[in-house]
Image (cartoon, protein in one colour):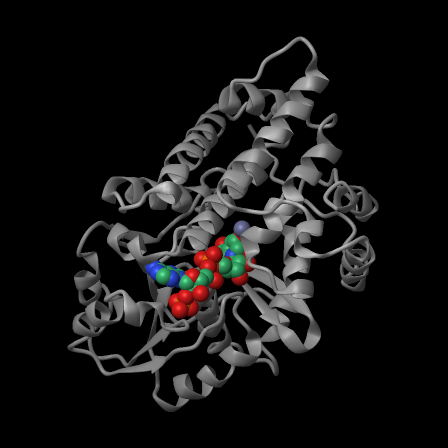
Amino acid sequence: MKNFEYYNPVRILFGKGTIAKISEHIPAGIPVLLVYGGGSIKKNGVYEQVIAALGGYEFYEYPGVQPNPVYEQLMPALDVIKAKKIGFILAVGGGSVIDGAKFLAAAACYEGDDPWDILLKGLPVNEALPLGTVLTIPATGTEMNGNSVVTRKSLGQKLAFGSSAVMPKFSILDPEVTFSLPKNQIANGVIDAFIHVIEQYLTYPSRAEVQDRFAESLLHILKDTGSKVYAAVTPDYNDHANFIWAATNALNTSLSMGVTTDWSTHTIGHELTVLYGWDHAVTLAIVLPGVMQVTGQKRKEKMLQYAERIWGITSFDQNAVIAEVIKQTEQFFRCLGMKTHFSEYGVGEEVIEKVVNQLQSRDVNYLGRGRDITIDDVPAILRSRL
Ligand code: NZQ
Ligand code: ZN
């Protein structure tokens, strides 16, 4: 196991009725900015619960954060933050709303000309407004990490930044809030979280047994309970509870300690969202089987471990095992109603050149942190997904 430092200061308030506890965790007497998305919280009763909990505060609202949050839509909020002397941001929504709020929290304290440079130039974020979250979709893990992904439409860039300064002070995870999710968003959440685990697990052996076994338990829960949540006619509280907690743990930094991580599937996926506007998980479900194909031999040991421990596939013929586990993984996504090939979206071979150009424009050479996938591998990955 490699050396690591572990720090996660996010307070989690988990369970039914926990939105009412917001006021215990926001300091009194400071103006609050309530940031939310396109209106789902107004249809499922979450908005009313939040407004009731904010009863004692001076607060302002900034709605309309779009899926794959957009810099151009977020920037006007900085004027509100300044004019109203906002001292705390409360993000109520999915990964997009929370990531948008993290960007605002960092941008509000940024002293340069354009806070986009935080993402473009990877500038360190040492200071940010404090923020809290009410999570409404289990998927990204952003509720318990310091990452944020934002798109700048005019430049065709979807970029990430990370800082402990934007880790939420608290995150509220009430499973009942997720009962209103449409099926495609449940599928998105299961697949995104599943692939977060894969990005940190399906690389090279590190003798990190805690992380391996933890990753495997999360994969099982996402596969089994995630599928149940997707198929359910009536939501089951405990299934939703386990789904949320698995998704949160899939990207709250604990799995990545002491191991080689990847993130190539995400790197390519973000470019596909820029090009086609697809949901984040839609891109991942197409790309991952291609990444597995191209890395199957290099990552054979972990590939065989994944095959045996998650899918029960064993054989003397290792190549057959690898081929079968790629097939099973793709089939799992398809059972969640997800398409897994470009042709199913009417996209052809042109995608290869477009993605390569996008990556080259930002001088991306190594796609993953394991440095075993380069820009030269991208055509083969994408070609296998046509
Ligand atoms: O906008 P509203 O009206 O709220 O509707 C949303 C949105 O249309 C809806 N929704 C959310 N909760 C709901 C609900 N509808 C009914 N009932 C509920 N309880 O779902 C739609 C999608 O929401 P969004 O926030 O976009 O989804 P998700 O949580 O999947 O977030 C995706 C974004 O997170 C980034 C992605 O790249 C993408 O931009 N990621 C962030 C990461 C991080 N910060 O650590 C890591 C991830 O890998 C990912 O890159
Ligand atoms: Zn993701």
